[in-house]
Image (cartoon, rainbow, N blue to C red; front, side, top):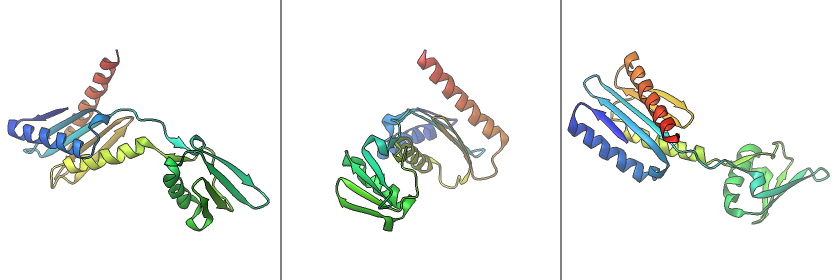
Amino acid sequence: MQVECYDENGREVYDMILRQILQDIQIVRAVNDVRIYIDPREPVFIIALQYMKTAPPVVLEDFAEYEYDAEANETFIRIKDENYLPELLKKLWEVEGRNKIHQPSRYEVIIDDPQVKLEGLVVHDPEEDLKKKIYDALFRIIPEGFRVIEHYSEGNIIALTCSDELIKEEYLEKTQEIIAEMKNNKTRNMN
């Protein structure tokens, strides 16, 4: 984690804010690197965060078996691991409609007149969950009033360039420098 600011007191305060928010949102262990660049004289605030890779998404086949009954026009899902059942139900309600989903027991779900292909249906995506938490943290860290935001996201790096006025090209160039530096550090750490 690195905070760059011409004002030493400001740098220390933002370092403390950064660490506290990452800890509050419980993503400290999932973060590889964070860089903040602040210059209130301009005014510009840049934050770039690189997160660790997560577990792959959990698909329906990972915890359940299903079978379509053409005569009844129903799909029967047998749950093998009920840990993902609440997320499965939520997903099915979204894609099929709540009125078509029935749950006669903890280990059974029935879909009337199924319309959505169940094969490979993503029920839980750890990376999406992590990204939501990261964005929550980033928006808490951005200074009040810096609401003009340019967003960048590629792979496992998310960066926000913020100001309280129009974002200048030099701010975006600084953001790209920070991102390139993060990528280079990642490459060096892998060797």
